[in-house]
Image 1 (cartoon, helix red, strand yellow):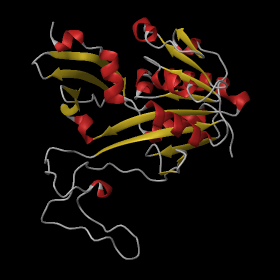
Image 2 (cartoon, helix red, strand yellow):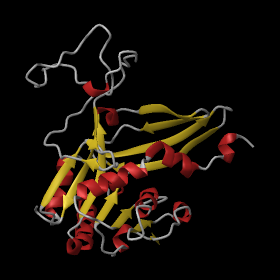
Image 3 (cartoon, helix red, strand yellow):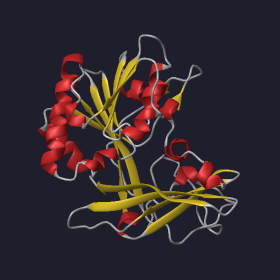
Image 4 (cartoon, one colour):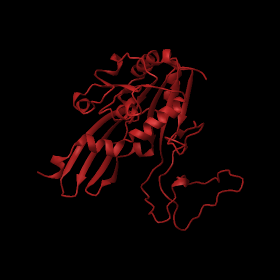
Length: 295
């Protein structure tokens, strides 16, 4: 039996796509109160729910997914598992999280609005928040494949088909390759609608949320106890995840302002030893947070 046959695709998924402990810290920091009940919609293996309840006996979670197979791996004390459509979940929560771009399962705006209104009802009595993540950018306009080493013997490949700009729908695949030459092709396949932050903000406001914010990272700072400190952003631009060419240097202006340039790059990720890959295209990723209270 080769390594692909022995591997657990859900373990590989969590390794490739999730950071449950950091995500829990982010959710609590964004809530800015003392949330104890998490609703994880489109939960898959409920990795975030399982990390959430590890914080203490007073923490509980409701994990909802229509797929029985990943839910079988999600069992944990104080995690309530529901195999159902997310519209069937009616448990109140302090935080509802829709992560790993799963809001793309809502292909039509009416479906999205119905879901957002439903979530609002689950949250409003507890003054809660809805957190979801989005992605987009130029690489979604072309067929794209990215390979990332996961471990000494496993490589993870993310592929997406070019988005249909009439419907804004995109097909994405996750595959895994092993050092013995075996492969787990298309271990996960998604057919998503891409939503922009602007579209989502407008839909959330229409659904009754009085305050919506955008965050571009899991945390801005972490204290010595592991608490996250986060701040929303007012602007979000597509960026190229590549370092500067070796023959160009960037000197930050003395007044702290950003120097205008025709090339957009991640300045914070500069690595002078890395190679420039000319095929990289501007992309963005963010978390959109809707609150049931205006303050």
